[in-house]
Image 1: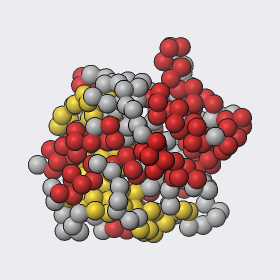
Image 2: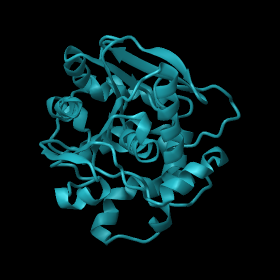
Image 3: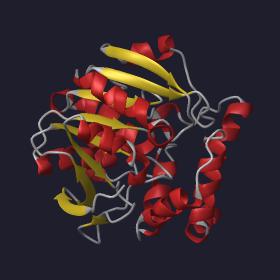
Image 4: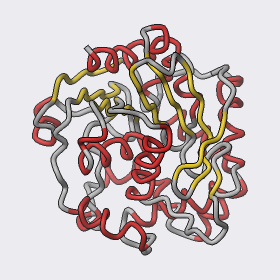
Length: 296
């Protein structure tokens, strides 16, 4: 992604963004996941910009050049926090009804905003479908063969895991890329372009909090209590939505359209994509096309 990043104040953050296309184009916000960064959308952005979009790609809290404004702000990685970051970014940039599109953490932020503030967005593209976490049910174990894929989350529940992430963040990210996208052979240059994002001083704290909070192991930031209560009701997402699943995604395996449909009263389409977990980097044409189809 060649667009030079800039910074915008949005709520508790100074958010690093990359913006492409014309400011008079239809707005799109693209949101990355863990352990990835804005470079996941490197080949999606020009496809959208050439089609007339005003494309904004932020670095999430704890990644890249995004920084907390106040040193005393809790380094929370909870779902409500990243959703509010997105909401504040939309407001700060004056975006009118953007399409929000993402996967993993970014898809979760987009899903929460679409669920709780549907008037603020015009459509949703979500990798892996409905991503609002049901924390109340999170302590119920799955079958062992399903639990195994979340080993990295359980690792981060311990202080050993925190230290491991701090000391070996790039090695852990590389391993997860390989595990989650077994049919994708990424280049060293591709990985290196993202690796620097993990050097953010808040990366470890935000990531560890995220994977502990979602299991109810730690408290969240009190500033987001009301939003977490609303998320706990598992609301439907009523905005027009296209769901993408990666056929080869080993961490969040693909489901059927019938499994996704109950969460999305306005499900425009479901698409099984020849990709693993990093959908926009592995299948940029399909990801961009989903955004454009929602626009039409």
